[in-house]
Image (cartoon, rainbow over all chains, first blue to last red; front, side, top):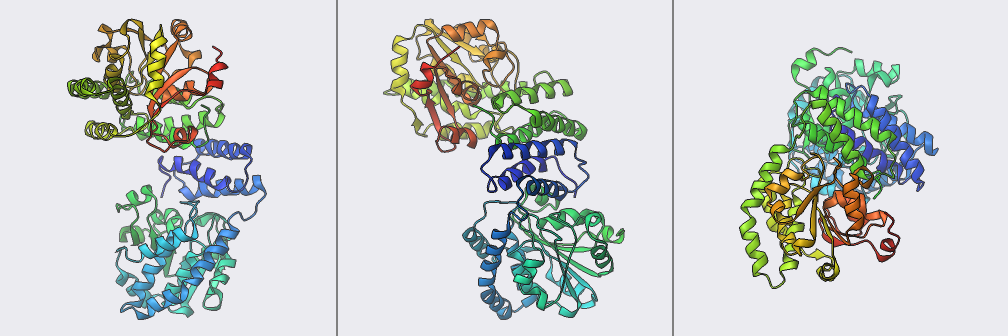
Length: 292
Length: 292
């Protein structure tokens, strides 16, 4: 997805929300805002919004010297999600359609997104997840069921820490010996890295790799060759979250996207109401034009 | 009031909201957004937000060649407010405190602000005004009453078209022979100019002058010498709207501000809830330091 002009106010807001908890030095706040403005002024808008997210958070880390600003929050959201794990596992096991329930739980977990809402607290997240569980899902779980029945190599692209524990519920419904889970290559916002996959217990279930990139999405040209090879050779790719959607949806990649549409620009892009819980795959025409 | 970093996303949003109705040419939308970003990146944040508003709307007029983009809306909001005039006059006349009721009506009229909400429709405005009439007023009308009893030269700085008809209700409660009404010098957003003062019938009631500037506020250094002289020699200045507040409040000017706080940054600046109806005068210390 290209960067819409409407994304730009949000870049500035996100930069401000991200820098304020890191330092009370207003000169630093001002510096990062000016850098974001200069960079956005010259940006190629054909790039996806996570390119700018990558720039903003790289500069934040460089300027403040904090290598992983969201570390504590990631640990805390993992712990919260792990506390909910037994109850959620029971929900899946008791369901008449365990795969469908696991998909819904995985999408509900996507509310844990500190890029969209920097001040999200644990109790906000718990509440939002509970509400999210009764949301309708825009999409057909049978499409995933059919794809799973024939897929030999399944690649699951995770999004955020905390959320990754919800992903585990869905991953447990997949044929584990055929699944690889991919996380981000380096810390970026609260996106999951290897540490979070370990915290969620995924490393003992399936193969876990990282994508070599610090973008809050999957910018293939920025990923490691190893990851790109895995991406090319997988016959079912499941991608969680808005960042993966923004970076992969419009480029003819055959990917099953699962996310909550928390951003009005993304919701408009797929013509669904803001807040929708979405399972979507690009139209067949786009898939046939797939060119990796 | 200085420009807060939180004002910056709003500059970009306002520029987008303003340019889209003027042209469907997305290259023009992109051009204006890039210019705003470049300008904001280098801006002196000690300047008030209306400085950037002035820049944005000047460039919009230059780039699109439309000299008065809000002309039709201004005419339409004047007409709407004139349709409500007889009913509102009756409200003032029937009130136990006509001055207090006229102040409340003048503040209610401040919802007609297309800088804050570009897409405001007539029916939105009518509804908002009706709701606004039952809002509490943060401020003491007796302070205005006392100031009026001794003031020899009263200067009333208007804000928007449409709203200026509501101002007429308040102006009619003032000693007319001592009142001068000032409007903006040139079209800027939907701010009132001489044409609107005439439409509101103010020119037959009081002296009307313009301030010589096209800023959406009162940047004294940008106003004509004639206006500045009037500003210096008035012993009561009443200023409507956020733009006048942003440009005059922190500089030690003794001004009675009347507005609805529609912006979270302004509301926080005066420590009142968003949406508050406000009558406020800078603290006495600031007034004593008045230096024109």
